[in-house]
Amino acid sequence: MALIATALNWLLKKRIHQIELFMKYPHEVQEEWFKKLISTAKDTEWGKKYDYNSIKTVKSFTERVPISTYEDLKPIIDRLRAGEQNLLWPEEVKWFAKSSGTTAGKSKFIPVTDSALTDCHYKGGKDMLSLYFKLYPESGLFTGKGLAMGGSGSIKEVSNASYYEGDLSAIIMNNLPFWAQFVRTPSLPIALMDEWESKLELMAESTIDHDVTNLSGVPSWMLVLLKKILIKSGKKSIDEVWPNLEVFFHGGVNFEPYRELYKQIIRSDKMTYFNTYSASEGFFGIQNSKDNDDLLLMLDYGIYYEFVPYDDLDEKNPVIKQLHEVELGKNYAMVITTNAGLWRYQIGDTVTFTSTDPYTIRITGRTMNFINVVGEELIIDNAEKGLAIACEKTGAIMTEYTAAPKFDNDEIAHQWLIEFEKQPDDFDFFNEAFDNALKSLNSDYEAKRYHSIVLKQPIIYKLPRHTFYKWMKKRDKLGGQHKVPRLSNDRRYVDEILSIFDK
Image (cartoon, rainbow, N blue to C red; front, side, top):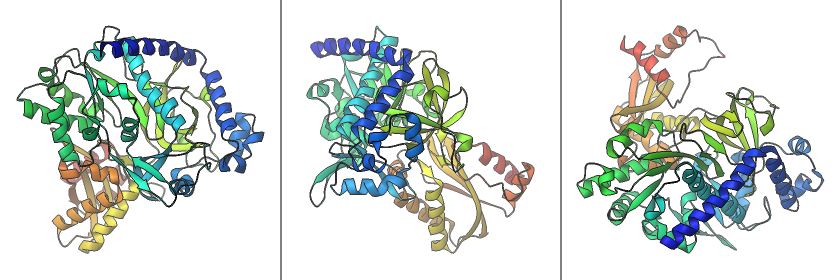
């Protein structure tokens, strides 16, 4: 273990010089990657379609190649899953990261290539440690083990090939070098288990006696595991179980709603919470300051970035900003071109720049209304289809609705305010039918609702008729161009409406 720690420390310090290089020359590094991506893919089906061989400038690239969504690329990705190759990128695609659903289906399947795994996802993990050690040089992180919560996955057989699909974390863990198993816990078979309740039980049992120095994962699920460990250990705080615990590398959802909950169960004043921005499509940002959790935009991961001003998203031909054109404080939808063959792909996230020297960002939301407090990524399409199914099953007719998360101590649920033209015959059955419909439509919601461990059953309030009208009138938002906001990640709208309802 000591030899591994020494080698890792040396490698991480060496990488800091490369990070400082792209911080100093961001535009040159991005230009270099742009050229490399175009050159590498010129003989793929996609590269031939848009004649990549003749593209020499970013301007010609943006004029020729359209911005894509998952729905746009889905037919090609389906062909990749069926065994075809050399469609988007000239490497065999053996892994597909299963991500949250879209209007086209319950789940997305993001291609993951060798290059993306090595030059992006693994590099991001190593850089996370590099930047952490730069900020905390006295860290004892490698004196113990890291506890990482992984997802699950499985091998899928197709007519002439097989591929692996699952959570990105499962793909990463399955391909870790052998030495990595010495510095992490639990064992791989437990970490990759599919059944969450049994998995959490075994994770608690198998890690409780280890010297855990660091955690990594999504805050919601990690919180459930830590509470289970406290029960099993009989301790009052996690730092009594793991006295050398010093950092939680978190990502996936906003950490702020969980901060106080973590402080209640991890009481050590040396505990650090370290922000990252990773998705199935790539590893994009890492905290690089003690003073704030802004994210350094990682520019040498085989990703070329573009940005669409949020206010222009609905335009037919929105103005696209290159990195050197972004402005501080403005909201942008992020567009990426990657070494996994995602070409001018609109990932769906919105960011704002907090600095341009170096380039640092904060995640501001999604390009559509959504609820995502525990990683459920519930979108309007899911909500409206689910409500339609519940109405059909209960004879109800709905006129308006909105929803937001509700936090009650450490319990989290979605609160739905619904105005009915005709009320359901049975409200309990309506709630159950709606909940089940959402589970069938959205795999991330289904996972978070599993046995109500992370996300509780929806809370539905039936509002008196004309409540939404009164609210919109109060906000001076009457008229055809104004719409009731459907889903929100905060309670501003819901609390305003309830204040009218309570009167």
